[in-house]
Amino acid sequence: MRREDAKRMGKKLFNQRLFAKIQRLSGYLVLVTFLLASCKSQDKEIVKKDLPNILFIFADDLGYGDLEVYNSNSKTFTPNLNQLAEEGVRFTEAYCPVSVCSPSRYALMTGEYPWRSWKKSGVMRNYEPSMIGEETLTLPQMLTSAGYQTVGFGKWHLGTTFPTTDGEVPVGYGKFHDEQNGANIDFNQPLSDGPMDRGFQHWFGFSCASECWLFEDKKIVGAIQHDLYTTEAASPGEELMELPLKDFLPYITKESMNYLQKYKSEASDKPFFLYYSPYVPHIPLAVSDEFIGKTEAGPYGDYVFELDHYIGELLQELDELGLRENTLIIFASDNGSQFIATHAGQDGEAHSNSPSDVNKEINPDAHQPNYPYRGTKWSVYEGGVRTPLIASWKGNFPEGHVSDQLIALNDVLPTLAALVGEKIPEGASRDGYNLLPVFYGDKVDLEKREAVVVRGSGESYALREGKWKVVGLGDYPFTSPGELYDLAEDPGETKNIYAENSELADKLLNQLNEHLASAM
Image (cartoon, rainbow, N blue to C red):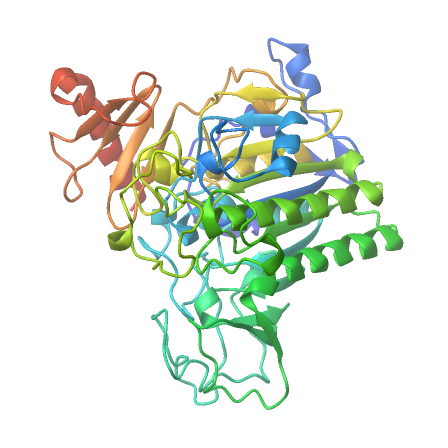
């Protein structure tokens, strides 16, 4: 983002990010130190000339309780993610902060709540333009400015503009399915307004799965094949790659590994930011044949196991190339699982992407993806908005550390900016906090995140502050009564105690309304 653009956004946020005040000068990274109480904390802000590589792994619809390291009763297997947690920091109070795909991805990429964008609610539909405004600073843009190579593989789902042969919007615009999908797409012209226009220097993957189109950088090169999707009406003019959905995960893993091999062979003097964003375990459950039936959690659990396997392959490649030592690895999910329970023998195809079709019956012996929390994807309750979050950087972050610091995906951009020495312009990353000391195992004395706003599908909002969570009922602005939960005593949100604590509850509800009034 240009400095003059940032100024036009207005000085809406008083920037207290003392840990992030590092500037770059004449090609060298120069530390600007502050008088803090602890010299130990200052040392952690020293940005070395050799910046770490960064690998961000972003699962799709994976539940907090899917990982064995978060749920000892999990009936799927996640040995590689368990190992990653043992080698780094595991966060137990991390938020998405929205329980559906696009808004959480927006929060990660911008450090802002998604209701600040033009897309106030819901996910991106087929062929819609970028959810991220041209003036908005993104994570890959910030890292590019810091000297990084920025590459992405997998799912974008933040909007891309597709050229058409007739100058009209693509057939199926604003839908998730159309029998004539692709009929007027112009395959000879480049895409725009996508990941390459928001900071990535290389991209392979898709924008929205139901659009089907795979693109490399700005050129359509193939299409996802699945019974739910259709591309028969398209006329590409040349043969495109046809990739069955069950082959997409291994394919983007191989592409990521190919990038790492090329990076190593070229001996680049720039660090890399690799965004690995599989479409797993999102439905349709396109499990590879060799993983079917490998867990007691049904096809969904098999898919989680397959995801862990390919994450393991990617981490092993880092090891074999000698890149692991100086690579910071972060893992998270974009929202909770859509399943309350899964079990062996379950039909892997009888599922829809609609909250009205959630099966609320729980077999006591079944796997519970969002355990121990209430709700699923689409829900404002913890099962929808709580995410497993793991960060590992060997020799730098403590091993096997568990943090209960409140943190959200919004905080990734400012935290990494502090790490790499980039100053965030005023008005950017308005809802994110620099929590870098927490990754080193320290408490945050300054600029601590004390509250987070979360949202379910549609217009359901809640505010988490300390151990309290207030849920607004009805339409915004919310009025008393709502719902109030003590998450320390009742993490499953089983007992609404609004009436018994009305003064506190009303105060929190007012805070939620005030935030929305300033951000909408």
